[in-house]
Each structure stands twice: as C-alpha cells, then as structure tokens.
Amino acid sequence: MKTTTATRFQEVPPQSLVVYSVGYEVGGQTYYPPDIDREQLLFWLRRAYPLSDVQVVQRTYFAASGRVPHLEAIPPYRRSTKGCCTA
Image (cartoon, rainbow, N blue to C red; front, side, top):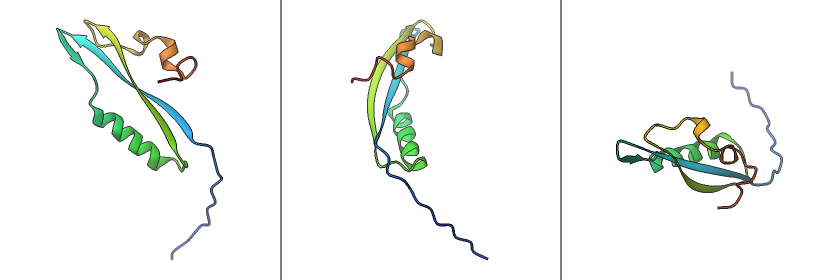
C-alpha cells in the first residue's frame, strides 16, 4: 500500500554561510583540507535543506605552526558570524 503526504514549503530568505579552510604547519609542511571536502559539505547542505538559495563566502585561515590546531586555537570571532561577515 502506497501512502502519499502533501507537503508545502514556505518562502524563506536566502541563507548566508561562511566556510573556513583552516590550515596549519607541522614539520615544515603546510596542510589545508582538500577543496573537495568543502564542496561536498556545500553540496550536502543544499540537498538537505529546502532553501531557495545558500550564499557562501569561502575564507582561508592559518591557525598554527608546529602542531595540529584544536578549536581553541581559532579565535572566537572566527568561530561565529559576529564580527566576520565580509569576505
């Protein structure tokens, strides 16, 4: 037996998202996540949420030398949208 459900979506404004590529250096080698990781994240978000548009700003941030950074190594203003809304 097949069941159907009527679904209605409401208009919503475009959503803005800032995506960081956080780099670090260990042993003289600099590392950044592969671009494909960021692209897959954005692809998934656009499929998972029924939004009319997702406006994405992509940024790069170098977090640390000599060790793999933890979240605490990234300044708080870079972890939130407050104070960092321009490219």
